[in-house]
Length: 151
Image (tube, rainbow, N blue to C red):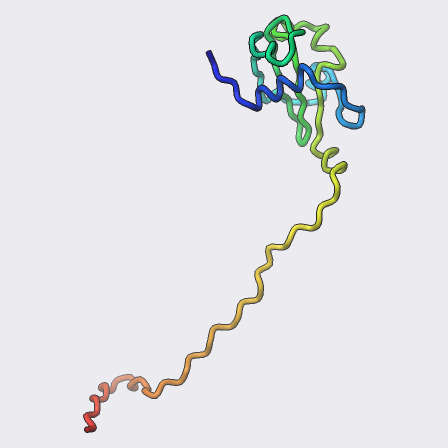
């Protein structure tokens, strides 16, 4: 049997047993409305009945989770497998079929965070000046001086 990830189970749980949220928390729309508005299908995931029943006993058939996206807005539609497979118009036109979330609305609702630190680097210190050496290099074209042998 295929293994289902945590994200899939979360999505299934959100579709099955989530309590209705306030109108400010989410928008609902039909699949056909979203497609007409230019949303694109990003994924289609089959949820077998055995997995769906782990979330709620009310489920009677395999289901499909369809994820759509348009710019910064995502939508998740939870559809009975037969309705998806046969493109059942009444089901896909249901105004409550899909949950729509916009990251723009979430950003507006989120408390303002302090400004992010800038990536400016502190001014670099000037490199140390070379210390004067007691020995001076020989002039160009001259032979190096022989070491002195002072006792």
